[in-house]
Image (tube, rainbow, N blue to C red; front, side, top):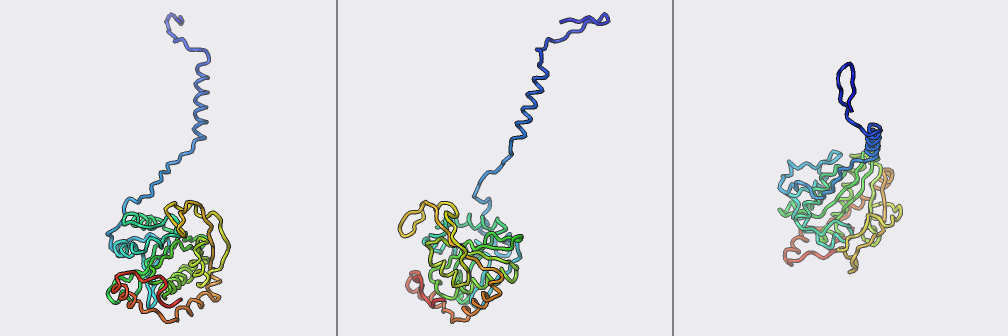
Length: 297
């Protein structure tokens, strides 16, 4: 189309009727669709980028939300679990000892390093190596087991035991009693938490019995808790793969200051087992000490 204007010729392109309003409508629709979109860049990668296998103890960052120094009694010490020092001991925990720990264990060297680093990366978690001081002073590896604190929360002032796994030869000795006393004293008296939780699957009767002995009070049963049990885990020779119920117990700061601490201090006064003797028996026999050796604590 040609338009004559003041003796000048102007060429105008032919445009479809209503094309401008249509493009604006399309733009508004696109903007409205964009407003409904939610950006989610989550990409689950459970494998830590660095496993810190050879980092020495004095350079190992525990990355914990609270201050921590090693905890010691005369016979037991709790220190951060560090691969360069404790991996051999960690891998010595027998496969069957991980039966009640869901997806944790049994471990190869690689999977152990991955899980240890995953715990370290979470500032609400703290992995602790339980050390037998008698054996250590005799020049041997004193690794006796592992404790894990999880969901340690400054705002709600609580913590949860995620792992308590003691080598079979140390079970029913003084080791776990001393470790529990040191941990609870740290949580209630150094960190001033008001609640510590202890969980166990309902068929782990030994763990539930230990919790009661230490003074944890039953709160109830959480049904179908913590998802499905991996199919490779077996309980009483039956393959798992279904959900399970969880026994939940707790101790409060009131419980601790009104008999809880004294209860454990009395237990700590009982005669200790000569764990150097256990070590020698294990060496001479070439086999692990059977579960339950020693004095009941």
